[in-house]
Length: 256
Ligand code: NAD
Image 1 (cartoon, rainbow, N blue to C red):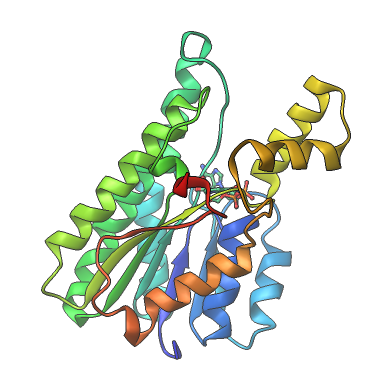
Image 2 (tube, protein in one colour):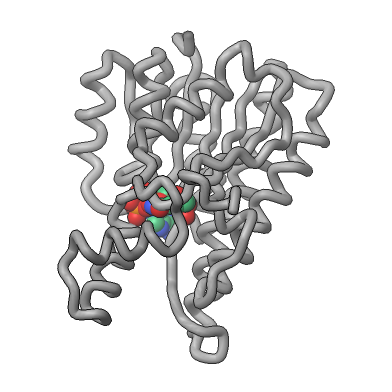
């Protein structure tokens, strides 16, 4: 379905980003991976799906590196048709104890990076009159949780950015939507499981149940593959007129 299209997925050396990249690749899209850490393993996983894959190591907190990444993708594959703004970090502390430098980093990586990647990828999409911008927000784009001020602010911000991007391009073939996962068991969440296990003196399994029990009625983690399937749906012809939604996949978290 996506043969001949190119997708840039930010923060795709791990977790949800890698899951979405693989789902898009399974539909035939060429992939530009991004993120820190080992890139060779993720590149091989995507290449095994029979598509072309490239990697750019842009730091999503740096606008000039984001511009360079989009230019690299356009030069390598000829276009950026699908942009998945996924890179993100978490930091947990009460507001009065929240390090200013961590606030700035969370806002830069989880919110401003999506603005920068979108502003440089849009002209090409509009020129071809086809594009899909998918912002990986969170349930925290819809509701709050204590001790996550920067994350919740950034995620509410990216839901707003999603709506404006959708509206500004509503008469074109470029759509923009957000995905709002609940708990997904990635390294980002495993750190929170570890912190809970340590704080309460409980096992890893008990800490996972505790985390799910606080918020997620299904008592199940959403998987990167399930989120990838939603991204593929947004890219399908059925997604042509889905514009500006914030679609939660959260085991009932925000239904409460
Ligand atoms: P993860 O830690 O597994 O992956 C994060 C990715 O972002 C990695 O590839 C990492 O290298 C990259 N990254 C981090 N800082 C970067 C930077 N400055 N520049 C470039 N890349 C950078 O986390 P994840 O759980 O897969 O999270 C991915 C996205 O999903 C985030 O936006 C997160 O907020 C969101 N999300 C996660 C969950 C969850 O439960 N895991 C729930 C809702 C939303």
